[in-house]
Length: 183
Image (cartoon, rainbow, N blue to C red; front, side, top):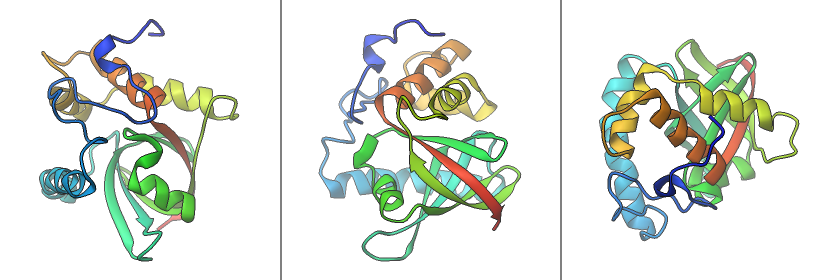
């Protein structure tokens, strides 16, 4: 699916707006409002993910660049061997991306366990970019249908999910985590 994305999904530099909730622009909102929104999402995810991390989701732990404390967030994560591909929907302004830039050592919890690794942003021209694009955008898991209902209008479909993942990858900040040992 390499055709053009629907206008409602096109964005650059992390200026993502939910198709389902066009008034909710998480990048234009003040920091306190974005943190409340993220906190509400974490409250929804936390009990579900404590029981089992769905395939296609990762529990990413970074080190706070200012506090030095662990910071946990839930991300779309696609594993491909010893690599995991992620995309920060709100781009380089995302707090966990800034944490990774300050300290690339992360932990990521996946369906198969928790791993230590080193994360870094990737861009076109990077040797892993094309493989990351193909895997991140082309792999669809059951949880993606639930996620799609939150972001897009109408009933979810494989096509709509792939379009959404392409929009996130191409309009946000894609990253790769090179997995090390199990944590």
